[in-house]
Amino acid sequence: MTTKLEPGQPAPAFSLLDQDGNEVSLQGFAGRKVLVYFYPRADTPGCTTQACGLRDVLGDLGDVAVLGISPDKPAAQKRFDQKYGLGFPLLSDPDKAVAQAFGAFGEKKMYGKVTMGIIRSAFLVGEDGNLEQTWYKISPKDTPTKLLAALAA
Image (cartoon, rainbow, N blue to C red; front, side, top):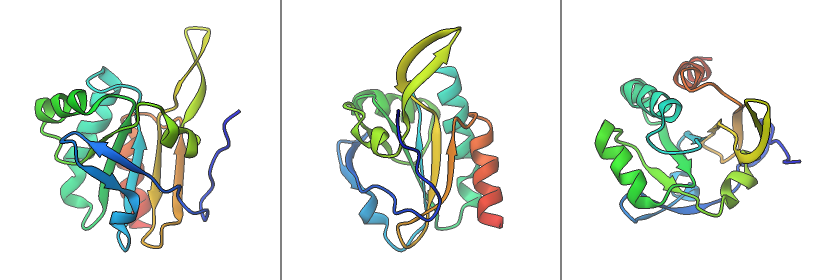
């Protein structure tokens, strides 16, 4: 069973390639709030709803960075970004190590069948690198609204 992270804990450090092949690390955003969210697969209906919803609120986030992470390779992330004009880094976690560190990989039930995979999750990391909010099994359409509510609180 995957361990779930709680608010107040330090966010796991990571460094992954983005859709342009650039290395992006959480440490590079020190001093800023960051939404780190995990999605199962680029350019699928739920993942598109989630990513486009976040794209649509980017202007309301101020200095908050958004990082999307999935097991997709950078080329697939690039196509996804270009198709929908997302405008934020999409990171490739092919071995799912970062998803596991965040507790966003584990057993899922779909249509009565149990499989292992990405558990759609989102995490608001504070300026100090500690988790301010954790949302496991978040719905794609709720991600932007929960983020905005957390920032307004």
